[in-house]
Amino acid sequence: MKPGNMDLTQGRPLTQILLFAVPLVLGTVFQQLYSFVDTVLVGRLISVSALAAVGTTYSLNFLILGFVQGLCVGFGILLAQSFGAQDREGLQRYFLSGCVLAVVFSVILTVITVLTAEPLLRLIQTPEDILGMAADYIRVIFLGIPASMLYNYSAGALRAVGDSRHPFYFLLFSCVLNIVLDYVFIVPLGGGVAGAAWATVLSQLISGLLNLYWLLGRIRILKDRRQGIAVSAQHMKRLCVVGLPMGFEYSVSAIGAVVMQGAINSLGSVAVAAQTAGEKIRQMFTLPMESVGMAMATYVGQNYGAKRIDRIRQGIRSGLTIQYIYCVAAWLAIFLLKRPCVGLVLGETTGAVAEGAVQYLSIMSVLFFIHGSLMIMRNTLQGLGYSLQAVVSGVGELLGRSLGGWLAVAGFGFPAICLSNPMAWLFALIYCTVMVRYYLKKTDGGAE
Image (cartoon, rainbow, N blue to C red):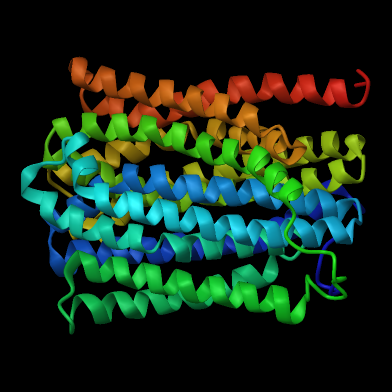
């Protein structure tokens, strides 16, 4: 492998996790930035109704593309474990087998989701006045599932072998491209919300192709591959055993988001627009926590492959320290900037939609530490290879979001929507923490 690939089984855990996580954090910040710009362009250049239409598709987007992301995270765990164990043949077999599975799942998911897009939107009670725009947007996003699979799998493979920098560089390029294409497709070409969706798909496709080029042409993950090292049914089975539960975990969690979206939709277009604006801003602040979690999964995977359970324990403490420091900084930033941020998205800082978005951010930011802790514990479980437990934690998120949606419909209204995600995080965190402690004790024979 190239010198830029990090061996996370050596060195001080806090330093290694930070160094590996920084490109991931920057990548998600820029990724969310272009999503944020996409929201601003849709809201300001098309209409607030268009913003609500894009926002109401979030839960379905999360449901399907979350499965893709989770599946690729699972594939990457086995690549990381092979890399940590210095098993080059296993690494190559897993990579090739994963490529085949990625193509198969892409085709199946694309066909099913494009055909069922509008019925799914009706199922979550999308308001009739924005249904047409929402369907136009989500169909294009679903047509781009192969691009999403390519990006997530190739970026995950690079991270598995210790390279978090180049996925960031390629993502940064695609972010800039996405912003340019957003403007071109929406303004000169008049593509509306579908144009914004095509900009996202094309940018992600290019980023994925760049990742693949680096894997094959520069890192040369298949270098010195012997004639017999090819796709393996055994390795495909193991990839499915680990990857599918992680994909389902993301989807099970997303079902809760679908239930919550139905509750938001029942409160009307104002609530949909307020939650959409607030959620976009919230994601800008919490995605870095998820990036630290992604770094944790690779760190744990490599050290588990190298049988360094002591370093995994140290890494958990280091990861939590990073998250808590960040949570304090994020809360302070939102406390000071929430109203200007809402104004940037909506073009106004007063009115029912703006006030709802401000309330959403005020409640969520106080509870960020729950999300940060969950990202460390859940990704530790995933790095250890216990993907089935991730599904159970997803059920916890489903329960939390469903409870928030029920409370909103039962009369608590928008404040219950604001608490839905934190409740989901808390339920999942409790389970993941218990299981991490159990499996670490079991792995090292009960030693603390």
